[in-house]
Length: 367
Image: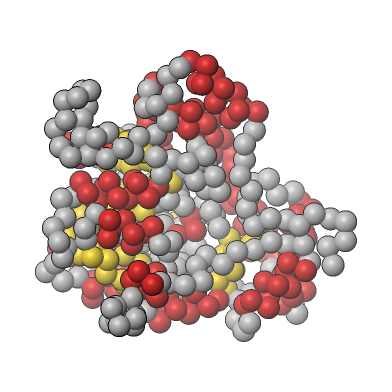
């Protein structure tokens, strides 16, 4: 049914001439790993998070893992996470020696439910890790109050939420730390990379030690650390992308507003009161046969994605030894996994692309 028109992909990385020129400039400089470009990227990214300390690392997963390692968790320590997320959220807890405890989500926002989070707290809980899924901030006001009442750390998984905010306060500036990803399909990227943000200077220093074999001065190792440094090539690309983020964000939000106003027969995204949603994904709910619906869009030249078809608590590494899902009862998580479908939302979409998306969705929905 697509005819001669190219399929609209669900996402498309942006690598322009400015990014290429920045990479070439750094390669020619000879300063290619954790040098002046990384320092400049950290300083510039700080403006997104109310001037917090920023520590660049080699991926969003590394950002999560190093942050949890810096908490000095003991075996058996628990971190409350949503199961409706990418596996890296829970993987990081395991890699840091902790136990992920899964709590259900709010059906509207797909984010961690504060009431479910409260019910999951035990004497072993040390942290809460809300995910700002699809670019919408979690209910941070309630989550922060809950954490304060129980003396828990809050680590924000902001991998999909660059420049998102709640009541004017940016994500990555609420908890002890925020963790961002710069994977190629994110709202901005550095080919690969991550950033940790924190308001605690000592915690930031510990993160810098952990990312660089436990040392600030060469061969003066202070703690056991890892090699999770960011290259200057990646940082240079990230700096170019950061300069374009505001414009791209507004285009994503404009695209979302058009889809909100014109899609029929599906449930469009819910935006929480006071939230600035930055639409890393534009995720609808489809009742009935979601796979058939997706196939119908594909036939009409519109790409889409399912994020995420299997909740983390149902993935093999997180099953019990007997192969069961254990004690987790997460009805909203399971329902979302059966119904979500993400449509193209990237800023490079043209007016014609948006019209094609609406036409395809409405036609498949029979609206």
